[in-house]
Image 1: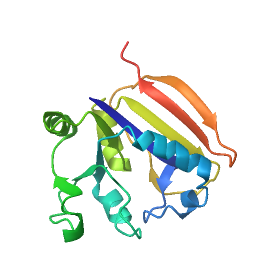
Image 2 (image 1 turned 180 degrees about the vertical axis):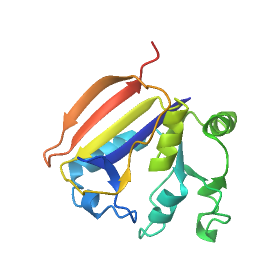
Image 3 (image 1 turned 60 degrees about the vertical axis):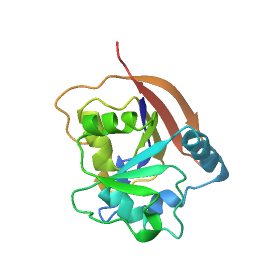
Image 4 (image 1 turned 135 degrees about the vertical axis):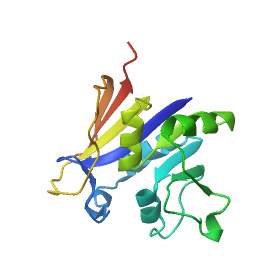
Length: 176
């Protein structure tokens, strides 16, 4: 099983404004970046998100995930009826969740959302981290990274620069 984070961040390290707004990120969408995401998501068979990400996605006009989505939340008790087959709420720590997903045949897991990514990093359970840095400063917001009680050494795999100024860097967990 492999776990992957794929996320955009402002140059000053935020993944969203304090209220969860990502207007600053959406303005940089392009065919180039859409193709990159499409290539990434085509290899994913399950998605793990937190409550905040789930609530944000519910504001979009359409549900755009083809893969099964697992929402980690103690606050969400019910999934909208229209999404019952597409999303499931679970309350498990990262290691237990990965065991559950593995036992159910999932092998490539997309981890998304600030707190969820941070919880997987704290337990050193992210195999790949793809960060797209957006050339914008938003001043404050929801940070990508939080406190760690240990160092995590990553191996830089590649960096791509898109024509709209976005810089995507791919890292893998350094197991050595």
